[in-house]
Length: 142
Figure (tube, rainbow, N blue to C red):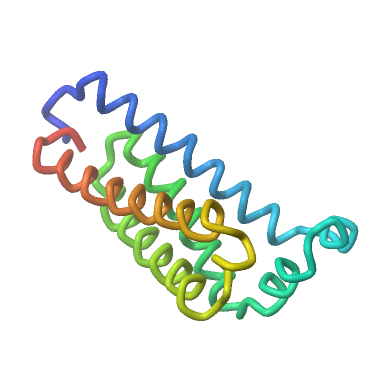
């Protein structure tokens, strides 16, 4: 049983984590269900990256986003199960972004913002949420 009362900062971080991961799930769903009409509006280089992404990377993207959302919801409900779920999210984020950095020309195609800075932000947030969930467990919050 959780014996310590969470601070308002705990609730703010947990709510922001849920909202952030909802955006991740929506990004995944947007990519997974993209139509040919939508692809026609994109630069051909971006379509090429999407179409040549291996299924296992797409699966990592799905796992990263859905595990991130589940882990964040578990934080909101103050459950220790958030820790291993957020670890799964972190590992799959690293796999997905590692592929993007080292096996594609995403930085060239998407530019510094979307090709480099945003993936780094995603990695940093995934690391933070895993670390923060472990910290909250040591404090007896979850």
